Length: 435
Image (cartoon, rainbow, N blue to C red; front, side):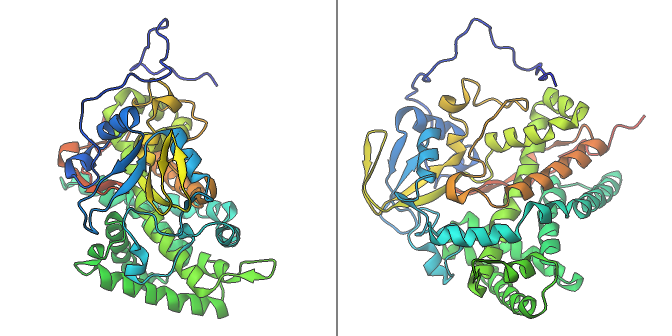
């Protein structure tokens, strides 16, 4: 198929692509504790890439603002996440020290290194198979169509329709409840659990994230899943929890803590990231109407558009590793025992990897890979599931409402150093054009 040409970008044919962007010494500094930076982190990332790619960020001496290192260029981040022998996940994924221990949670698979991580992941992958994911497509599509019908009715009644709260974030919540085969009577409990874990994740798993009732919701979820795991061990069904209780490789099985930890990871990590991928894609296409028109005319562009939008607005902006020996990156030596943030959101806009148009959106961009789902041993085990949900959401949304947009001025962003997304994103032009 001939690659579509975007009408919004026509580079001069004689202009060579620079091999190294010209350094810029002005612009906002990188500060993950500054709400202004979190609202738009990309100028700060650019300054890091250009002037300080292996950055030592000084805190204020408190546990709430610790010192840490940050890698901002694609090649450096990619090499680090693929090298668990130097950059370990076992001490947590944020720049806070011992965040999981302080919450009293057992280590999960995302906080393990090989070889322990390798064996656990093989067992989880066996249960979380592409076949199991593909079997959910009819239910996802029915749910999406139902949400769109309800939202169209509300729009007709002149109600404000929130794309993120009423649509994008609802899809992964529904899917997880389906995967776990929660009884219909229990499914309303799932929403508050997801909300609590999202808040906890945005806070970097600090105890502060459990304020305002979130602690009770998390405790309730863990108790519920603990009982569910025990039940499915003796009476397994066709659901994901049952598959996890029965998964076996070379005589090894997952224990209850492993399964509980995976439930925690998939709810905390797979819900808001997928919802934000959907919301970001709609918001970005609304900013670039010619590209939206291309996609509406050719839905076959949706998978590539999702990949480009995830690159451009990474749902996971940054996660940490801890150096387990002294390492040198870009001529800078990082001592052992240091927290090092992998700035995925910066790496995914690095001109050295994606060329001079790295900070432009192009849904026809030919991407061989990016760090939107990480890389290496901790490449997102649910990436194929996220892509499926987002693809179905966009297929149905644009088929029904080809000019869907958002009110960015009224949007409420979730401000976190670790994830990027929305709490609220009101829709505009929701109804399909009427003759």
